[in-house]
Amino acid sequence: MIASALRQSGLHVALYTSPHLVDVRERMLVGGRPISRDAFAQWTNLLEDTIRESGASFFEATTAIAFADFAARGADVAVVEVGLGGRLDSTNVIKPVVSAVTCVSLEHTDYLGDSLEQIAREKAGIAKENTTFVIGEPDATLAAVLTECAMKAGADVETVPAESRYEGEIGLQGPHQDRNAALAVAVLETLPVELRPNSREMRAGIASAWLPGRFDRRGKWVFDVAHNPAAVGKLIDSLREAKVDCPIHGLVGVLNDKDAGYILSALEEELDALWVTTPPSAPQDRRSDLGTLARYTGKHAVIEPDFARAVEGVQIGARTVLVTGSFHTVGDAMNRLPGFAPLG
Image (cartoon, rainbow, N blue to C red):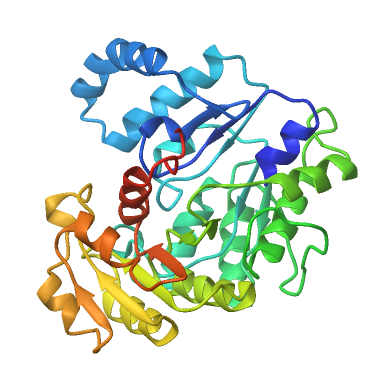
């Protein structure tokens, strides 16, 4: 939403997001266009020795490539999504004009800590001296933790009230997006005058914002990358609000570091049939054991290890097909369906 509003104001805007669904170039957009294949190859060749010598992770390497590409393509401003946490994330090498935290959830506990307060402290690590830090977390206790850390870093803190909602048109679907839009407006309003869109540009940007795989409706298909309990709860709310056609069948693939029991049981209560499978792009060491997943499902679930057969089978008798559980599941399904891949 922030990037879309900035583009409405005429700026040449870079956007860095992760992970991708099908093609790594989805992560690196300038003016809405991905980095070219040739440019990606050239930057990889140029940086390869440094990447290998430093032992950089895949995410660290792609972050370096993205920042190089944004500079080379002459971006006026970049909207950069943190990969994991904040304090130690590779995106945190930048000095932001403004930084923000949407909300804090219990995820990546092996890296970020096993409590919401610990995770909040890691996320607050993106707050910088003499910059604005916008807090969207509605829980007062967690917001206080974020505020404390940001003030210690010397940041100016702005908190979006828990009841704050955006009341204009929103391009992204789901009842939770009015809260996200309110946070986007709060961020945009803190920008320096030379970067700040006017109210009309903000409204137009939020109304036209779109991101593939986020309650992404395409005919009878709904794609959503929800992969934790909080996101699945929002997905279910979105399904109810959208009043999609029934019967609704779900194609679900969950990685082994997620709360599969909650995710599968919550979805099965809402859907008419559930096909549980393994996305082929998932790394071997992150694939769930389907026998274990079967224990979390009931009589309306089909366990199908072959992804292609699952994609075909889930459509039989369905008026709506929901694909969810991970970025891998959504991306692999899009890649099998003609014209659905984000970059074509």
